[in-house]
Length: 269
Image: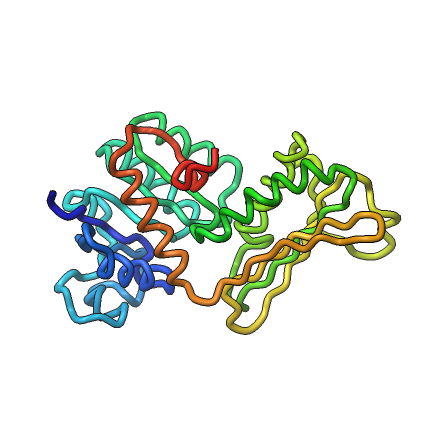
C-alpha cells in the first residue's frame, strides 16, 4: 500500500515541527505539503529543515488549495478560524483531517461537525496524548462513582499559550460532567475573585496557571469528606501529542466519513 500523503497545517509552529518529525518517523506516512498563515516568517522555508530534519524540498506555503491537492490527509494544530475553514475544504475533498486546535468556540465546533457530516473524516481532540485520554475516561468514572465530591481542575502551561482554560482542561471537565450527566457549560466555574461565598455544590472549578516552558500539567481533584483523590497527567515532550495524532490519522484512514474523537480511536466508547 502506498504511503498516505500528509499536509501539516501550522507548520511553522512548535506543534507543526513535532508533527513533521512524527510523520517522518511513522511507517506508512509521507509529508506532502506544509501550510502556515499568510505573513508567517516560515513561508518559503523547507518544512523538514524547519523541523530539524534533512531538507525534503517541501516549502511552507499559504496556498491551501495547492497543498490539499497533493494530500490524502491533514494534521492541523493551528487556530480556530483556520481549522474551521480548512475543515470545509478537506470535507469537500474527502480527506482525513486531524484537528488538535484548541480555543474553539461552540460555534467553531458546530461548524467542524457540520463539515464532517458533509463528507469529511475528522478526528478532533483537545489533547492527542494517549495517557491523557485514558485519564479522561478515569475522570468520567470517578465523577460518577464519587457523586458528592467537589471537582476542581488545575492546569499549567507555558507563558506563550493564548487560550484559557486549556482545551485539555475543558476536555477533562466535559468528562467529569458526562460522568454526572450534567452540562459543563451550566456548572463550570472558571474564575474566582473577591468575596465569592461558599462553593456551590455540584460545580466544576478550573484554575489556570501560566509560566515558563511548561508543556502541559493537568490535575483533576475530587475532594470529599476526609479524603481527596488526585488524578493527573504531566506532558514531558510535545512528541506525545504528535504521536497520538499519527495514531488517529492511521486509524481514520480506514473509516467512513464522520466526526470522531480519541475515544473512538482508542475504543473507549
